[in-house]
Image 1 (cartoon, rainbow, N blue to C red):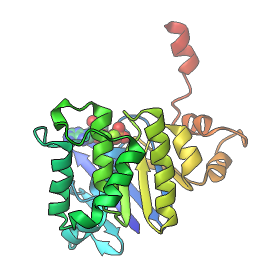
Image 2: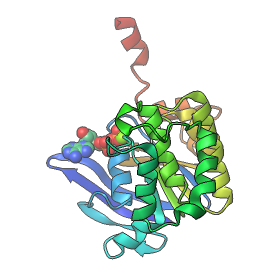
Image 3: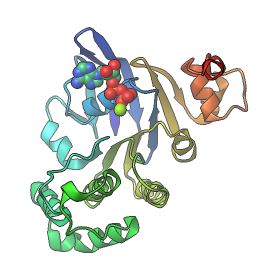
Length: 250
Ligand SMILES: Nc1ncnc2c1ncn2[C@@H]1O[C@H](COP(=O)(O)OP(=O)(O)O)[C@@H](O)[C@H]1O
Ligand SMILES: [Mg+2]
């Protein structure tokens, strides 16, 4: 469902993403991990057609992003790290707007929207977006994507700003979603989410995919075969090396 070859993005002198290869099968939840600034958002933006790669190719559902961008965008869902929604729309107007853009039947979708709203505790569709908190906007955005049931959904740090119950509901929904044959690509720095939800995990560091596999396969690459994902992550990204020194200095 997702195939990227030698995906590369340079911003001037900055090598944000370098030669990343990805392959995600139908029905899989793929977790994309990396420290801040590692290149996760840049990768997701290239995979979803909002940023042109400097080099490399993206295929989604077998379609080439270069030649089938609109068709791909019709069929995928993207939840960005910042829920940017027109501030002067009411929640309900935003959902109507998305229905119009994607040419969806509002009446048919209405029961699904009601279900999603009650699952996420969204009882503020009459509120104007500029009066919503980050978490409230995030949930509205999630509903606008999940209501369409896209075949592939990309989520960039989806649990940031969500309360514990909403985060749990999102996790359960995504699991159900893949059981229906959909595919999920998700970045997160919450390692516990990746550990619990993702069949395969890729770790990006300084723009390069430095490890990939199931948690067991990742553990094989570290000294401690019983390590938690947190330890594996810190060891592979060498971020753990000086933590104790830093704490001592503080
Ligand atoms: N539009 C941009 N212009 C210039 N540099 C950028 C831009 N977007 C991201 N970068 C740089 O690319 C690198 C990767 O950023 P990003 O993909 O946002 O990381 P992550 O999402 O993993 O935190 C960082 O060094 C960041 O400063
Ligand atoms: Mg990011």
